[in-house]
Image (cartoon, rainbow, N blue to C red; front, side, top):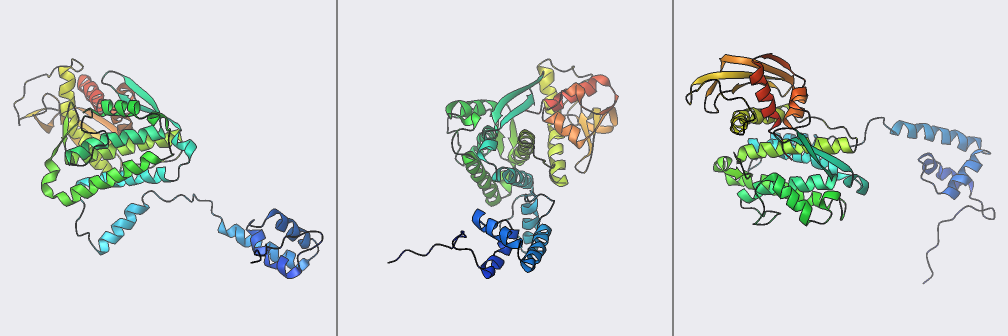
Length: 384
């Protein structure tokens, strides 16, 4: 059979007809013509007033199609669509409310990662945290950050009976697991391998976590998740993982110079509440390590004692009262001896170990020793 005929191309020997050139005006206005067609159309416009007038109208119309706004999808679009769908028809197996923050923050981070190119996956990222005494950090890449999230999420996965990406003999602490992953996976910390391959593994694991707790029933909320030297009930572990998604999404966004918004106010308030609830225990651990002042007085469990008023301003903020002398004491507004007031952005930077405790922008009043101890304990909540 004869080969198919090729599309005609303009040449000096075979010029394009007026009708064909007029039919190309729309493609020319959209800059979709080939180089030869563009040259032929523009040469024709110099000699044909009717086509030149039509070309101007089409070019003006094309200008109206362009927008000055970013064409990137709103990271919260998925959450709004799901909320609208579930409002009309509730899910038969609803997701627990305490898993919502993790589901939303993982989706927002995934939206940031979805369209990254190879160079962006290998972009250098500086992870920062407070080791109890000073700020410290670790250099990796965007791919290395997602690998870190995946292997720490694996602790939660293993507690639910799901496969652990590090295997049965994996270290217990987040730092040890991450270092082992970066050491045993060639180039994992530096983005070697197919761009974004780790994203699919991390995202599928996240979906499995949410599905599992959704089908598990109410009793799963109190299941303990062991993080090596501490443990959290799984409902708090999901909040902790949501906070880590937000912190590291911010690290990635900073590395690739991309804007990233805070979480929804309800989710942000839940994350700050988790930090506030962890502060008394963290303060006690720092005392045992000789890093905080001893308690001023002994307080029996369940009785009021010296209290610090933590005030966080913003849509996700609120008021929290932190017992100072014992984690088992009751915090009482009447017993407040000091106040720390800061906005939610400053609290995020402090709790994520991105600023030194002594430099946290805050309104401070009252017992300076108690204020210092709580600021340092808040920074000590951070980790790799």
